[in-house]
Length: 124
Image 1 (spheres, rainbow, N blue to C red):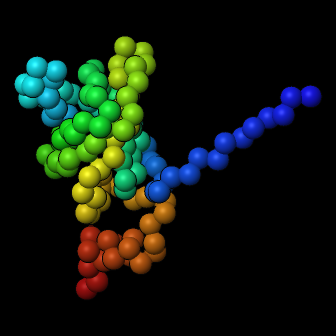
Image 2: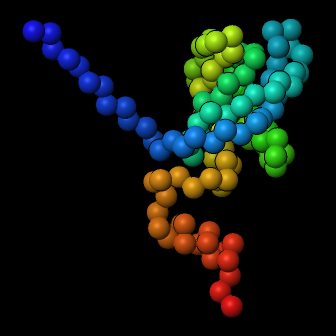
């Protein structure tokens, strides 16, 4: 009888699906700055999984701009693979600061969520 092995995936933060259109600013192999349309599939406080028409070398830095808000942050590429004619990039945010993705994560503390609500809906 074959033994089955189950891997437990351990992450620093929980992931959520975001589905956000993005622009990735990166350098091509010739050193020219390029702007490429991309899409955030999943995100966490520490990084994201992006789908893009171009790849970047592992370890390279890219700037991600959320199209809806024009907010941007610098990320490091930690994984890259091709899938269905597109590239999937695993990226790690370099300066996390506040919630770049503007979503609620399941591992947020109640106090943090309550503070956000108080800001959005002040008591009168």
